[in-house]
Length: 110
Length: 114
Image 1 (spheres, one colour):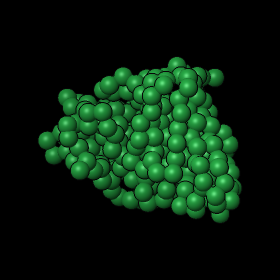
Image 2: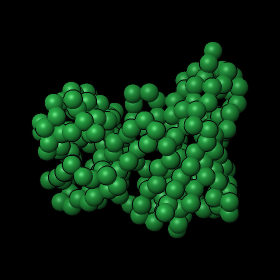
Image 3: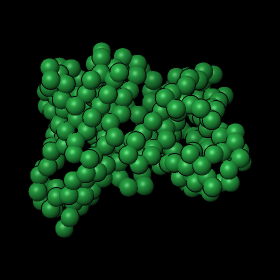
């Protein structure tokens, strides 16, 4: 069964600090992995997409990594801001199906 | 402004009543989706449509129906609402191409069934 596990479930960090969110998956065959950011009361918005051949991709202060051998991805947030407070959802495409993680809730505290 | 809209924003509904959640996109996307999001369970796919005129069942389709008469609209109907359908519902759309297509989500409808 395809599964996507995210850790931690929730995280509180001080403004300006860095953090890393984890995503482990058992999805086959693997097509791509996408990270979404969901602000409270809003729909998710795509941050970045990783394909099999990509190891690292950056989008501003967000950097995603992918290790296709260990089936792990991480999302690193640098110099966090209050606006980074949100839920971060990892979504893995396996062929024509999408498998969603349950998300990591991040709170950036002033 | 191009995007995807949902209506209503929120609704309180008595159990047993019929309810239709509306979703409209103006991006000419082929594929559309309905998800429900519950605390601790994440987003779960209810129904989807790969193109106008076709629909398919997702992970949790029971108690819900959809139609796709045209490209822009994808309404979700609860024929007889039950309290377990209390949730936040998100509509999404994508180009429908395989591989790296991104889903664009609406703002959501918060539904409470009493």
